[in-house]
Length: 305
Ligand SMILES: [Zn+2]
Image (cartoon, rainbow, N blue to C red):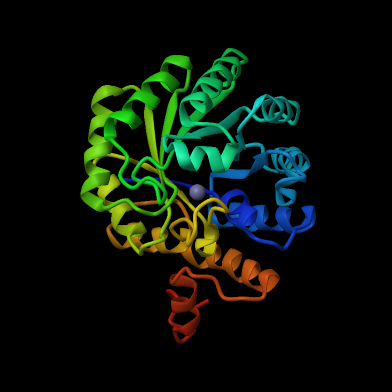
């Protein structure tokens, strides 16, 4: 059995950091990730560089990474028409787009109510799909919202229905605020699978309340085989108070391998990415396995790094 992990630290992780990463540093992260066995990589977002300067070099990074690693599935986050144009110009064949089903979060994040944001997004999905791009459409706050509390499954299903009708071939359910619980994940995944069996479903889980890995297992048991992760557990959301990052890539790899499920990723090599991030950011990151591996006595031939 096998799962695929899509690495998000260069986008979801670095957008939450005040330190600006240079092109050289980002490219070094890509090289270390590829070296560890990462096959899917979200390289950045195509948003206004004045609002998110951390992502200003996404276009060039995509071009360089595609040239150096032609087999790597590169993707980027697109939220508007201008971003779509930029993604196409630098040669991306696959993009992520997403909207929030929570009105309050949507207004804070993109300055529009959820219904309006969805309408604009479905239009954009149609344009991207017609241009031959692979589109993964995401539902932010699919499991709850810090401003609005519970989010109805029906609201998520309705948003998914509209995005699939517009041409999205893949759907990502995001626990943006880290409020999901394992049985809730199982329930929503089952309903989306049942309603849209042809759609590739993935999960984007933040570990805000310490339930990231549990929710990942719940999603796996419900049939999900593609998960977003971020090395070191990097990330957060400027619009979500108290937010922390995605499930740490190295912790997800350790968990799946321990359960006999392949990821194609080398844990010790992946931890070199975490080391690199920690050196540049001058702090320890929240993921567990890098610390565990460093604390183990070396020379046991298995885990010491
Ligand atoms: Zn996220």
